[in-house]
Image (cartoon, rainbow, N blue to C red; front, side):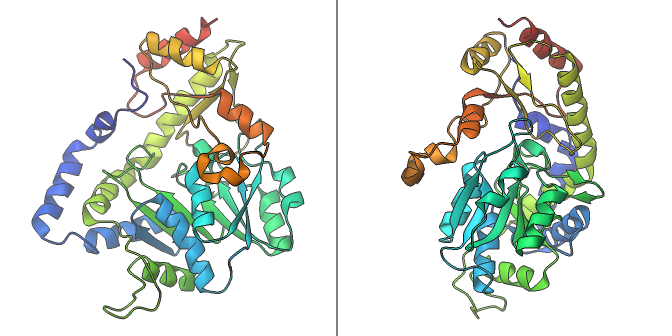
Length: 365
């Protein structure tokens, strides 16, 4: 069986270094808010290209903390609108509604699967205060056109960078393109911890200080609480592991790009629609394709020893959690969720596995 993603194989790439780092934490006696976390915040801020990195418990918390901090700073208030792609993972939407803000869903471009920049401006109202970009599947969603829209309408530009660690827009990395960005280090990400972990990056000192306090029970000084905060902290174990893996991220992303390049060149089945690369960078956290008979294709590949995933079978506006949207119609998003299938694409794959997948897809009928 060719696994979609084997976390054992991913971890084994750096097993000796990871074991040493874990052992160091184990024997330090310091498991929270210590030197490993401090070092990772410094290293990751430098890598992304921002002044500040604040670690937290997971990617959803990172998203929520950004909005909560802007509310505490008076730049957002209940009922304000946030433009967000309709085609995204539920966490992006949850972070908006959790803070009593209003998500305004915008369709993707079927050619990129990212938010359609041409539909953003018509979604702006007097209550719009921010755009949340999602670098979905690992592809940069930012464009200069979107940046100009934010400037023209004085909107916050926020990034959900959970799937795009190491991705670029020209000479900058995603996570440094807007006012603030959320990152997830869920184990299956391009940069993954050994459990849940997250971070926020920004150049805004006041925002960074507010987020750090909010994530620490609302406290900047022990036993003094400025905000009604929460407990969302990365532990030393995850920070130590991420410090080991971060220096290898670009190399591993390059392997993902090599695999994707072969897929794009060699998959020629007319029943398959590939999302061709444009001029935007892509670190291929996910390699998506579209197929009208997606479920049959997935079963066929499984029968041939190839595991795949669907990202995602049900779009946010059709989820029971958002019943108020269930009668809404976003045809491009719905088409994607009906047809999307994700192929294995990770740095542990062998060339033999890659070509087996290609050969199986090309003879699918």
